[in-house]
Amino acid sequence: MNRCEQVADQLSFTKTRQVNYKGKQCWQWFAETPIRMTRQAKPSQKKRKKPAVSGNPVNARLVVSRILSDSGEVLAKWLLISNVMDVEAQKIAQRYYWRWKIESWFKLLKRAGHDLESWQQESGKAIAKRLLVASMACVVIWEISAAEGKSATEFRAFLVKLSGRQMKHKVLYTNPALLAGLWSFISMLEVLQTYSSEQLEQMKEMAECFFL
Figure 1 (cartoon, rainbow, N blue to C red):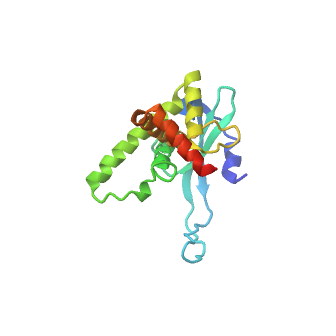
Figure 2 (cartoon, rainbow, N blue to C red):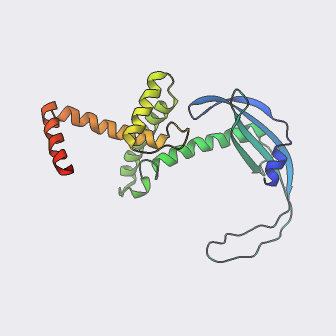
Figure 3 (cartoon, rainbow, N blue to C red):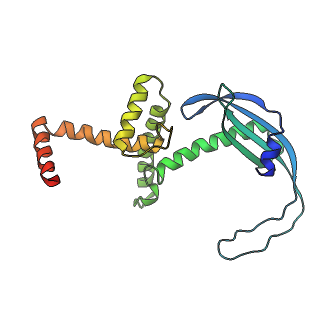
């Protein structure tokens, strides 16, 4: 356990508001305390090893944000060091929560979903159009992820199966898996609308020939 975590465990937390965490309504709590940073700065070591640099102590504040379930279980926590003194700690914790919501969008756009870094559009207009369509798909996935009820649970399990992705223990679904599964499902619907049942049966028999 690092020093910030040790300090955080000694603070008194205040219940602030309900937030959405992995499709469930939970409570966000926060606490803060002033701190003084005296350790040496460590420059980036990517290109070559650089010595630590001494400097003047920095006055800052430690803002701790926790997401708790109704039973009091800690589902997520953030230890935030900030030199912004004129903003309430509650707002800093809230903005960091929003930042992670944005990160989930970036994750779907990049390697876990739309593979944005491999796009080959050259003009800003073309990129904006594709980004708009991709963002609409992300919104659909978030709606599916947050939906409640037996039907929604079964639909998420259906999409995960179509995605072909393995889930970690006790993890029912992930947004990237839902996105991959939804794409497969849309492709399936297009095939069903294009080919008759007899044609699909012929395709099945042809495919079986290659497995024998």
